[in-house]
Image (cartoon, rainbow, N blue to C red; front, side):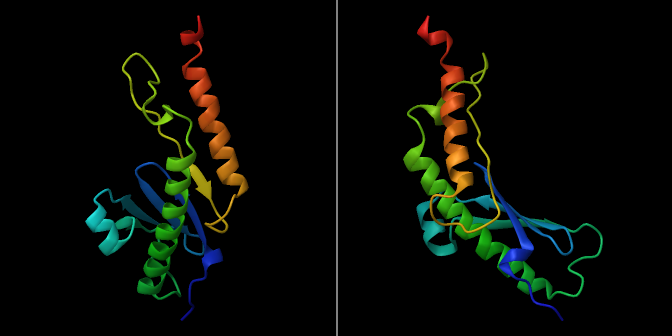
Amino acid sequence: MKHPARSDFHVVVTEAGVSATFNPTNSTYSFHRLADGDDIARLGPVSFAGVQHAGRNTGDYVPQEVQDMAQRLASEFAASVWSVRETHAPSGIRNAPTDAAAHPVSLASVRSARPRGNSKAQRVASEVAKTLWLIQNLDKAD
């Protein structure tokens, strides 16, 4: 049996949760974002929601090892991205209306390398957030 490695995964962090795709089998593991402080302290920032296999399950890999690695990576990336987003988001961006129906902005940050530090993906996400805020407030300047 083969064992999964960090480099076998592609992780996507959104406002609502995390998905971790296991590249060797194209299986996608989904995790919900936890909001309750007690739950986060007990379980970490995410909770397993399900898995979608592209056809051949986990192949030559031990299924529980793949899921455990996906959960570990999802927790690391989520904690890193969500803490950066919450501490460095421009004022008002999280609740800025996107149209007449006043839907909140939802940003996604795609991460595929290390979860720590000032990565290019974090800088791009920050710039996107600032640009969205500017676009949404164009008519307010008139």
